[in-house]
Image (tube, rainbow, N blue to C red):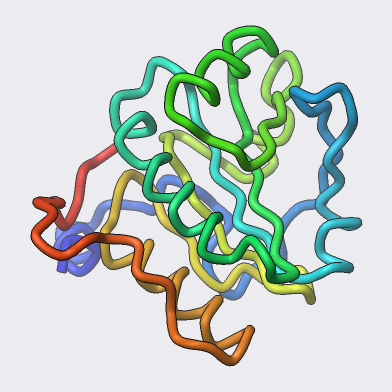
Length: 177
């Protein structure tokens, strides 16, 4: 519903990489000392890419839900990556503070990867299919968008979608980034 209202009001998307577009390739340094290559990850299966800043309260709210989705797919050929717009030390602290176990990488000075994706807001979440096409593009926290990622992954792996939100948990439908 929020997406419909934003379009109705004439708001432009806050990323130029939308569902159906090809995701720009990137390789970035990981917090664990290695590198993460989108092209290499896509050879294994879909990729959930989540852009963030450590000081972003909506990122802080969103990322534990992504961790639930990551854990639900721990045995599947899917890669999750948090793409930080902060330095390595701060990114590691963020990952630890929010209990995140999926890989974190740092966008380089000047944010070349964020710029290639046309980002103006974080968090921005993308589900990228193995063919490099974006299946889901989401800005801010969208409960419906995270459920769509869970559904798409469930379909891809031919199993029931992961339950990201717990029964009785008060979760808003949308939080702008």
